[in-house]
Length: 266
Image 1 (cartoon, rainbow, N blue to C red):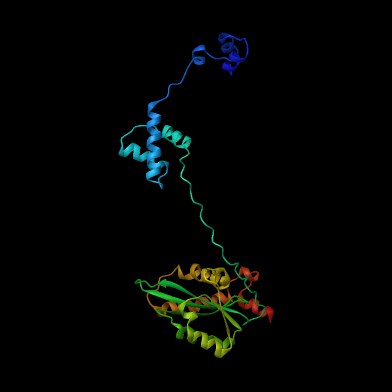
Image 2: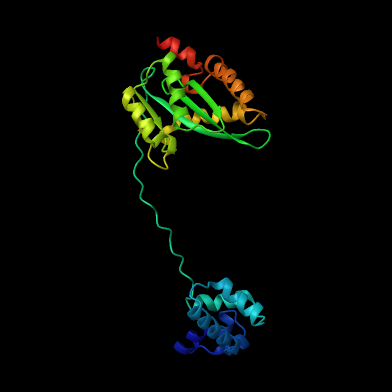
């Protein structure tokens, strides 16, 4: 501004410096180009051309730790930005997923069941599996099967026992585990005239009733006790299942137990 005032008006340098509160030494100062800046720029251009995936951090560490230059990182970064060498970050590609199908709300018992597996360990470290079955209508636990292995024939046998006293469901919802997509369960369901509904892969919310039930099983007793045998775990599961159905209020049922909800509906 002082230089323009001197060039375009008859104002002297002394007057311009006075009016703009500038010393005459600062007015006459001419910055001298620093040779180091050219060296830094040359190094940065060379590095980014030969190492295209290097950002500023790697370039600066290379100059500091490998080449031994003691330039301040702010100075190097300023030149890095002036040369517009910023490494472009490739944005993550968003995957287009199908919209999950809405979860059906059953209107009566045996309209829709859900089944799923859980995993845990005994006191000696051996892995065990739990097979849970739930009536989606009143969130009633229909059975918990515990064993080291639960292949498809065991799943079918457990479902047959439940059907003997509960009646046949119209449909059963499950995930895509090997026990559920095998031919034996498909033939059993076809013979029983039961529809098997497999959720979409990667969409556990489509089986939300049994997933929420599994969480209750985990936090109510499975994560609080250590069992030394399958028999003890199976007996405790049977006792807890009666407690869950008859004595444990369910917030999804307005604070009623599953049996109370079923009784009121009848």
